[in-house]
Amino acid sequence: MPVRVRDRWVHFEIGDVCYPEPAHLLRELHGKDLLQGKVVDVSDGGSAGEAFVVVEVEGLAQPVVVPVGRVKGVL
Image 1 (tube, rainbow, N blue to C red):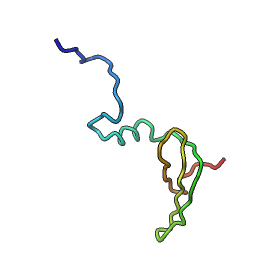
Image 2 (spheres, rainbow, N blue to C red):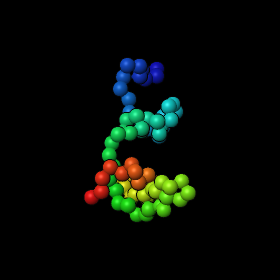
Image 3 (tube, rainbow, N blue to C red):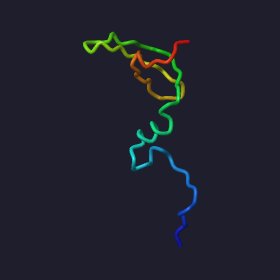
Image 4 (cartoon, rainbow, N blue to C red):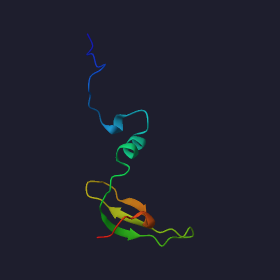
C-alpha cells in the first residue's frame, strides 16, 4: 500500500521543483532579502552606460553580478 501524502507536510529541494521554475520560487521567497559580499571587479559601463559590480558572497559557489545603481550600501 503506498504512503498517503495528501494533507501531509513534506520536504524537498528547491532544485527538484518542476513547476514553477525554481528561480521564480527563490525570487518569490527571498527576492527582498539583502545579501552582503565583497566586490571583486567593476565593469566600465560599456556602450549602455550602466556599470556592474561582480560580488563574491559567502556560501555561494559563483560570484553574482549586480548593477551599481542597485547596490544598497557600502561598508
